[in-house]
Image (tube, rainbow, N blue to C red; front, side, top):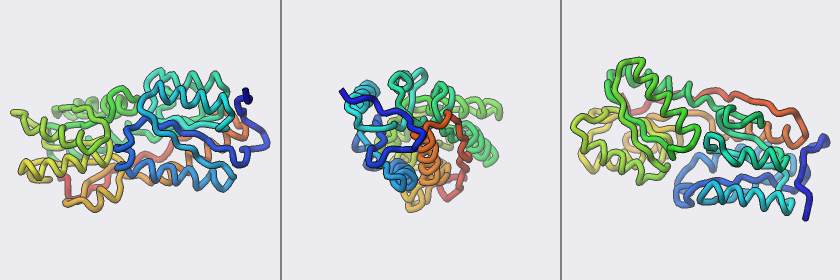
Length: 287
């Protein structure tokens, strides 16, 4: 059985990929611009060093674990990228046990000492809630990604904490990043006696689904319902009306991740890099 690749002081090995076992529904991934730009940014750094990126889409965390075990068993990758982690995630324990160089994208607490890039989701969510309260909203809604993910927990907790600090009500919905989840959230909201007047979504695709459903139900955006997406994209900019969005340079984030992983492949000591927090870009979908 081939040995598990380990970090080398001489740098990354040419033509041996790094792996990303991404837990996503294939249809959702196909519609979500974030990962296309994110991987392009990673490749902009690593491909120049002769290191390709191997993407494997799987349905569950156990499948991601088995995929990484197989990669290590047969020496198919020299490092891995971990994203969308859960609290106490078994993928972290696995990678540490295998000795695989890696980079975690997420809260350093979930990384347990592994090299990490953190996007400060709590800072961005605090800004979004503050802006919506300043605009006069007194009842806010949050449509999150999968509830078990660590970054969803952080965003939801910050959303509710900051809203409470401002004395405004909150209503929360759980989604799965799909357009259908945005449709379901607005349909559920419309059935409430007292509904939120602003919704914050954990990605752009859910926000777009909500925009379409609001139009179908006759809810005027933004006069009756303000919408804010997470991770700005062309989908947000081309929507009618254009969607306000939490905005950062996703390819630049990918480059930062690629750089931290390249260091790990060269045997550097683990480090945590804090990316610049995303900022709210206000467009016609919110007041």
